[in-house]
Image (cartoon, rainbow, N blue to C red):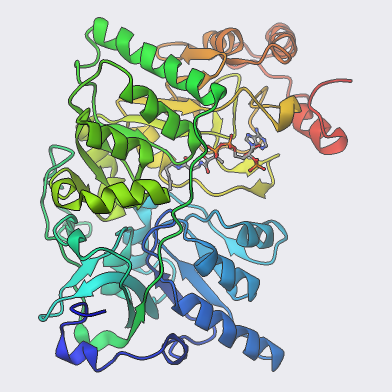
Length: 503
Ligand code: 0RQ
């Protein structure tokens, strides 16, 4: 950790994670750093989990409210969930142990747009923030903090929390210094100001996080990598989805509706999103830009090959190989990647101004293009909404993508009615499956339904969807025809028989 804690006062506060975790007490609200497995605290959660387990063994209550930027990893959400230490959680998670508790009713989870988190916490919608636990790459002599591989909501946690624990992680490259752009001047209504960001790569803030030194109760030294999980290589389904989107881009350029270098690309997490970016690598588009939340392998490849000139995100989410490339080229990449607070990366104002092409995965959509991004069979949480709504509603063009079927064909990802509703038809312009692409712009609900059935449905389910739509159209109101007591019967059949198809 040489050269990482250069502030005299803070170097005197270095202590073990075990000691530092004792500052966190039952019923506190704790804001931790971390976004899609990057930049989360590595030591405090495990130490805290041990204290929680010991308290539970003594018959005492010990749970916290946990806020982050977005998902973390097993060493953070996972250990705290295993210790039954999470009373409530927001805004996005993807950890199996926590998901299980949420769906068993053992932890409360409220799901929200990622762009809202900082503002709502700062106003106090969730009560006091008692402690911030933030990973940084280093602390400068004057106390400025070099952020780690994500910013997420760390800037707001540092401002809002009564006390702060800093984790200084020697695994995070000190060459990250200068890559971040922390803009804190957004203000609060009624005195909010415009965000002066007019290009994806613009810099409007400073490359450091700040905090009141007097609030720091502990500094903990760590030396562990981020989760850095490997993505599966794009499979045939993802490649087909990617090629439909790339054909669509070609057509839009031809029609003069997109510039030759497209518009800033936002892509969600996961393998399909990564495949679309891989598809762009082999496309003739040049001088691309990215304005997204999470910078995945596919976007790094585009930057390394020179296809993408500039990308803005709030976090990295790289495989071990990609991280090696990233670290080896940091000097050059610092000029081409900007990491910002999620309040800025996901801000409706900026997404609308830049005109992002928002590509996000979904669980299911219905005949009319309403989208469910979060719930399985209407009742069980998968991960959360993340930034999909921030980007989709404010996009220049919004895409929702999915394989046409899940669970070996037992589930159609296109159903008569969605079992949970995250994005309304008004926010959804294009639906894409491996079967094809439905361009819903300018179509009325009945036209949207036919476009989705014809272009996106799996052949096993196409006749079933057509039959439902035809019967609904002859019996119901014709704006958005439905047979209400049948509209969710496919989901019910799956719950009862394990298959949406009629045997
Ligand atoms: O289940 O894990 O048991 O195999 O859902 O599905 O096809 O592998 O797709 O990994 O891209 O995830 C929407 C969940 C897709 C994700 C979602 C099952 C399927 C599989 C995963 P298994 P795939 P992905 C910016 C954008 C919301 C947040 C967002 C997500 C598992 O993309 O969380 O967009 N999005 N953020 O079998 C039941 C269906 C199903 C289904 C798929 N219809 N019914 N199960 N599955 N369709 C980034 C951030 O915000 C941070």
